[in-house]
Image (cartoon, rainbow, N blue to C red; front, side):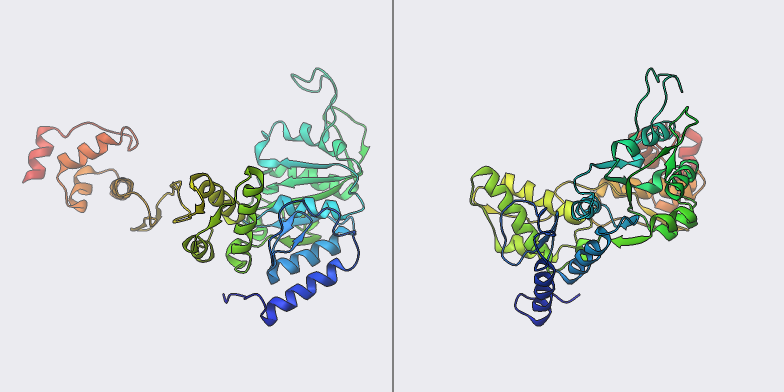
Length: 370
């Protein structure tokens, strides 16, 4: 993807679009967060970014915020889906109402119905008193359902009914409550793929995605990477009374790294580098914390991730070969080109992960030597 340089025609068009949006009045600016100003970095609500793809997102938010339409935000982890939802709420007519965020994947399946819709006293063990749910807590405002695909299909049916009828039933009650809440949902999965994998009901997908939005990954926001890094560093300098600056090499790393963890990874990388720096901030390699990634196995081939420690790669290959050989250690040893004793020693050092440890008996060892 080509970089958009400040002052270029493409950058000027983006700036003009932002100016037209903000020229509509203070209404869309009222919730711009306080913080340091970075030249060239535009903001909208709780979001920052000057790239074309972010300008398009701002315009979509501006349109949907003026309605009560249900919205579905799709995006990878770390792209700021909740910030998109909060910005929609802040620009809507419900801005003075509550914004309630619920992580559907963090609530046990047996409790999610009570958490969302509330419950009556004695409706289940431990329900010592009646309690309102998140639908009631968000009355007059917005209910943000994050990672909605983590909700079981049974509860997805009940959510669909609540969305379609505008009513819900607290657990243990036969009396419907009329809701007054705007629903915004989010997922880090492709909704169509989630439907195929039976993780999301198709009818619920269409009901949630009345107005779909996409939080773009940072690798598609080439113009924003350095600006965001400078913004995060400025925030840290302001908070700590410092005047640290990035080295030229650090800025090159920011521009060239793919940032698979998106804005969250960039922010954390700047924070770690800030802590380590005296005056000049270096980001020699963003992956200061090793990532644990399982090998990818397909048929008789295995792919080991670049950057995997040598000992871990060796372990993955040994255990993968043993599994491919159906647990036959003698065959696995021959395939790997090591003695049976060496294989047993390695498996012994891995503990019980292969399900069986120990040493080869004398017959096995002699047979292998021959």
